[in-house]
Length: 125
Image 1: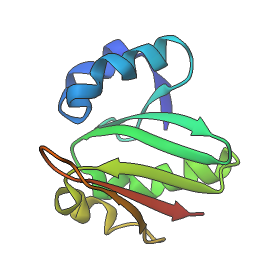
Image 2 (image 1 turned 30 degrees about the vertical axis):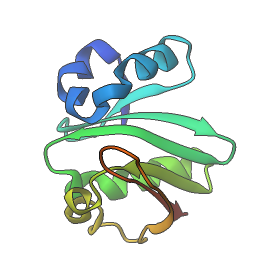
Image 3 (image 1 turned 180 degrees about the horizontal axis):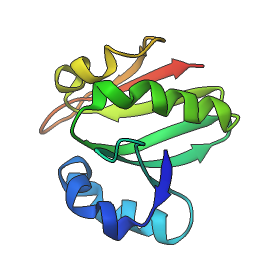
């Protein structure tokens, strides 16, 4: 994974950021989050550290299944003990994360009054 500017990734990341785009941009500008590109150049991720956990805030691109282990190795080699991600579309991500050598665990479901529920997953490294 290689750190890149938000400007390079913003078009690809737009669908993954949806209603949170403003907040995500502010976190990147403040240095709380960073944008990375997979080694094959096809997937971008916005990540932020929370203690010993690396949170994947937004991920988008082509071929997630081909790079998920790269993301996990990046987190582990950077000193993180776990990865966390949130999604409103767990079935959409199922194919991509199925290639992980370590399987994610569902840790919480946040029920929505309107719209889709939010599913929170953790991968212990």
